[in-house]
Amino acid sequence: MRSFVDLGLFLAAVALGIGSVLPVVGGIRPTEIPLVALRDGFPAGDLAGVAVPGLPLYESLAVPLVVAAVLLLAAALFDSVAVGWAGTLIGVATAAVFWTRLFQTHGEYVELNRSTTLTNQNGTVLLLSGTLVALLCCLIALRRSSTNPVSLD
Image (cartoon, rainbow, N blue to C red; front, side):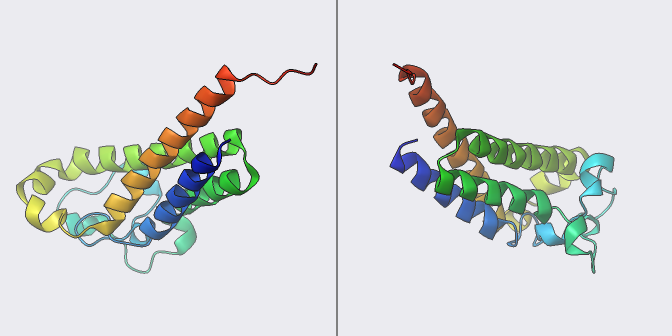
């Protein structure tokens, strides 16, 4: 890969790593959101019901985000397109499933209270921008590798 692709993957890894501990929606951090809620859905009612106090870190939404950040960092350091794609797909899938599940249950509340639930949620900005930059970098690396095939001659 090119050095600017590696730099982009490194910055995306930093953004995902930092974004996994900052508030995502309504002041709730990914470390407070149970990972099984992505499978089962969030409980109805108040948005504060999404957070589980005293949740062990290994059961939280932060785990796949940190795994994606580590994979993107490894891809940037070792110049690996496959590892970069793995980290990007984990980050995109986690973000997409989280927001889909959240809007299934609390979509109307988030839309009506947009000024309080989405304001100053730096984790959301870092997670989404990190995954988009990683996706763009992986697409650039894929495009460059297909136009310049390696020959064994």
